[in-house]
Amino acid sequence: MTRVSLLLFTLLLAAGCKPPRTTTTPEPASSGPKTVAADIDITMKGAGNTPRTPQGLEVLLDEVRERSSVPGIAAAVVDGDGVLAIGASGVRRADEPAALTVKDTFHLGSDTKAMTALLVALLVEEGTLGWDMTMQDAFRDEAAAISADFREVTLTQLLRHRAGVATDLAHLEPGLVLRLEPMAPEQRRMAVAMEALAQPPRSTPGSKFEYSNFGYVVVGAVIERATGNTWEAEMKARIFDPLGMASCGFGPTAVGDARDQPWAHADRGDSFAPVEFDNPAFFGPGATVHCNLEDWGKFAAVFFEGANFVSADSMDRLTSPVPNSDNRGGGYALGWAVPDDDAFGLPVLTHDGSNTFNYASIIVMPTLGAAVLVAVNAGGQRAQDAAVATALELARRTRGPRDDPPPG
Image (cartoon, rainbow, N blue to C red; front, side, top):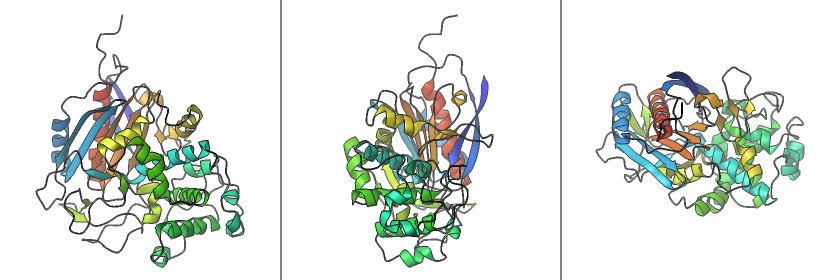
């Protein structure tokens, strides 16, 4: 039995990014990235080389929900042919009896970032963008307003969180969100991008990893300037529609009188309270996609070995990390955290996402041709623990034992 620590990035969004409408007053969001080390016993000897259908998914989800008291949790395991196992436990709203279902959509938070990186890859392949496109080339008309230190920053550095861009609204103009409220999302995105690029960098571009949602806002603005379309329209036309991800959209899954989808929940300590909350729409490229688990699995399958949605060169760029230098293990690629291979004995891509009132976790095992997807309709530590523990356990079960014992 081998004890391993798989480090899953908990990518929470910047403090203060809240629209005014809420059913209850939300707690402040985290101002930066965190990591959580989830220890699990994994039997490495005899692990399979093909995905296995995990047994007892519904029982696992019920147990995790009861331990964590989260309103609802859903999970799926997929391979290249589709869903191997899927289940849901709990309710859509903590104060109402309607059950969560496997067809419901869930907010993915920062798991959106891998989708934006894939969109960039598609645009690079057609010649609209370049991996090494600089900010002064992307925004020629605004180049004079960009800090001299940011003018040579590239798309790749932004996607890797190595551009030195602001990490919190506190680093930008006070009251920026309210001032931009009347604008369309793409106009807000451009304004926020220019504000971020006008500031002095927090660190020398390219020198260190510093998780930044605003870096992905800038990427979205680059996409919109280059294509003449909104990031949302490009995402739908180039990823959601071709992959058959019909359930996918942007923003909260339920507000107002809606009862046909899961609600977001705030953790009040002794209970979970439904809230009408999401990140500002301009955060889209980093944090606003929602999908049902089956459709999210179609996206995950793009990263399985042998898939050809993008070229081999693009896939290599998307999944090759810059190693961390903080003894955390692994590194960050383009929208993906990449743990060291010895965590599972095979390559893994992973990411966590939250708008502080939903939580989602994904583990992709490219060489195995399988992925684990978990979503909780609540935020906070209990939701994080529930999602991460479920994802790790399902990944263990999916790898499973070989059909026949290995020789010797």
